Length: 168
Image (cartoon, one colour):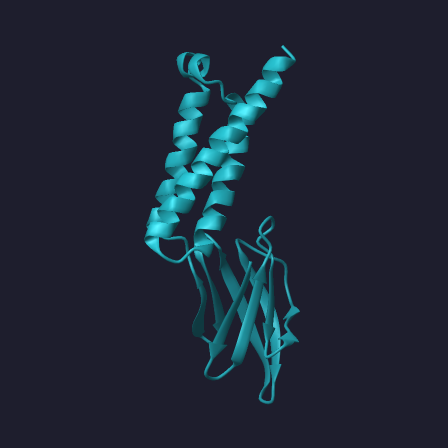
């Protein structure tokens, strides 16, 4: 995901975060910052050269917790974390499908993928749902998108279960 913020002192700050690795690429006024160390616990350290000399920049957080830059003791909020509505919706979706997939009675009515394959599939689709819900601004739209993603996740689960049942 790509985030852009305009700061009074530093100008335009752009942060691009990899969805899979949480690795961050930061530019200030179009100049890419040089990474100094390895990523430790979600924090990456960069070096920023100014007229006054080199400054240490620490990028921490993720798209779920929020991304912040620390420059000379000043905290710059790049992105807010996921809202409570988004987190509850994704966890609720994953729990419902996890229970459904591991219940023989419910799977006899409508088969969906359970076990470790279903849990992993539903976990990935819950993260995709969170990512899509973060792109929408209004709470009503977030609920509609969340419900649509829930239906899409159920359909994917049914399709995967039917494919598995064909080979049994």
